[in-house]
Image (tube, one colour):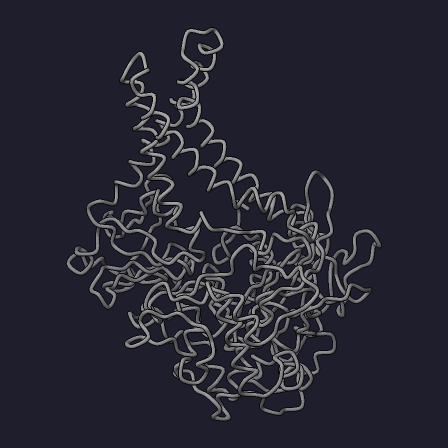
Length: 613
């Protein structure tokens, strides 16, 4: 690895032959505990490889073949987007149509409807501002599949715009359920039937199916997780959001899907299923603030750039669903593409790097980019603190709030975006306000202002990298968090000492509970974290969430609040009985800090999880 020649993808050994690629893939599979891999490699009109490595079924020792179906998750979105573009070509709707006008029955809550309505393009590009699916809306554990408006009603809370539509990109699967509904409404067919009739059959994809319900059998790979030295089969649970990720397909199927993009939207018999102009629309990011500010590396219509540190960019999409991780990419200019899926739930980044490096093996190393001087005058007003402002799930946003975001500072002729703790992210200028990371060939970050004039730092790698200037008081949440941790730890230790003193009758019993409640509140939070991890683990590996863990994860934050309130009441009630008033004041300060933490958790939705639903 130390002798990797110039031009090789960083961290990837030079791969010249298909045999070397297969050996390298097998090495990653062994290291990452991936049982099987289906793979297709396409170059111009030839198929370099179409088949599989490893096992589709560990117990039966069944190998992966070219016709073994894998669940491909969010790659489904690329089919749905292409299907909707077919309807747009027919004039049945348009990318800029307002969803409220063409489908007023959809329950979208948009406070900016009058000035910034949700448009079709926002749904396709994840820029509507929706929350991603809640924990209890990932898999459908019921025997029936709600359709149409019934499934949209299930996601009413997620279909709420958290900021102006068309401003920030935040990946949200419920938006593609709305896209699927529009596909059904304007085609007059269920989305599965439409995709099968107008894409899968014309492309001669023999095994692919968009069905929600997966029937296990010899033609389907089993998904696995790996723990405690053994594989655990993951049940093929149906999902509510079918248009966001229900597709299953084989290597033979995905060969045709790659060729569809390489052959300008044509079927094997030459029929144009999509016009070249529509393909370019799929590959173009239209709506977000970063797109309007000059970046060209944003998320398009279920289509995004891949392989930023390689010799050339690919376009495509990835996918993840219980037991499977998948990827699909192509480069139309070079005439190459790939698709793969593994049934071990991990290892996709390294697998994809190897595949891309092989397809680009004959391409010369790109010439070094010319040095662009930093425009100190242009970037000067943008230096300072930023806080992430587009969390994929609203409930995860509290972590960014509590940790103080990042600081953008100048370091000579480049910028560094660094968190309060941990390494920073180097940004090299490509223009006055656009930047790239070291080793990449194109801009992936931009400094701009939103509609309200607020400073924004936007990064398209990762795609949730939208941050707003934090202002002078950025330090207050992390400072309060540090104080809260200090108070809870010290008061918990003091509570244990107090317990011993009460047992030895050196303290009144009335003082014990006020002293113990901070420790009990901390235990409630720890229990919540444990129950949530257990809940998700059961859901993905056993096929059921576990009612006890669902209830514990949901009630834990409420118990946390109850302990805080009880502690305040008891401390005030017995204030005069404390031998040292400073102890009582210290407890009240501790409960105040915990109350602030409870308010933060409540603001981000942690007090209303209701996972049992």
